[in-house]
Image (cartoon, rainbow, N blue to C red; front, side, top):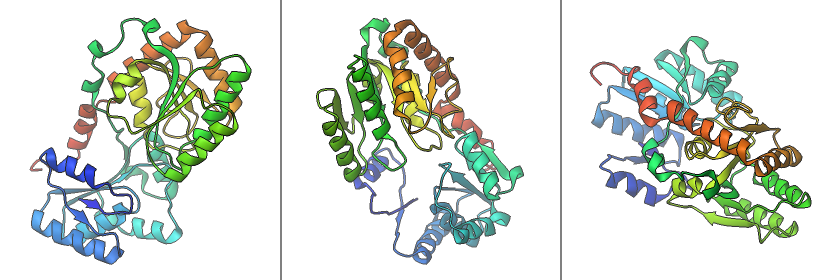
Length: 326
């Protein structure tokens, strides 16, 4: 079940249905109407378990499931920084008696749930996973030198992400005599993309920065690039970073909740101070000028991603929560 929002992409809904999934879409007009429509779907479907994802959707989903007597109800939190007002937090906690577990998509998100007052004994972490088949060994270059010494960031344009810091770091690199190409993949808010484009123009980086929009062949593009960056202000479980690691890129990430538990500094990537262009530029300079270091970090990143963040592993953890009859 999905809750319709202004940003809902009908093409994505159609794509899910084409995969054979039953997809129901409920309204976003009034919360009471959302709950009423959810209750009708639940009544017809009679689920053994309900996983309510996202804020504030998990409140309305759990409320509907509780009203319809669903025996196993789970709350899944996707980010470390959600918009909980005191009222919304009270509404979320009021559903505690009906909720079997609160699932954070990373250890950092689990910790943030506990800090907000959700019972620690019910808060667990299940990391999101990716489709590892898209990063098969035979699709990876055999030699590091075959990869372009460029920088790739795959992320939507949103307040959460920090494209500005990465662009300013690129300008700092140019002052140091380094001019790598920066590829920015992803859609998001057009106003934020326009702001990034203006910054690129102001800094005179038009010849170095490529705005790609959404791309359908991300694994192949990543596998042809040496460096992946996730510049961000906060995270839940950064799957784009995991994909960069699975592709064997040397990864640089902002040191924030969610991201820091994926990257161990100097082992499988580099962490930099949040919103600090000079710190970002220093890390990128190290990788650009030291190919052996970049190759070592990229290889370790791939091993870590393949061994920890597969979709099958994630699903096994969720299955353990389900009743035997589900």
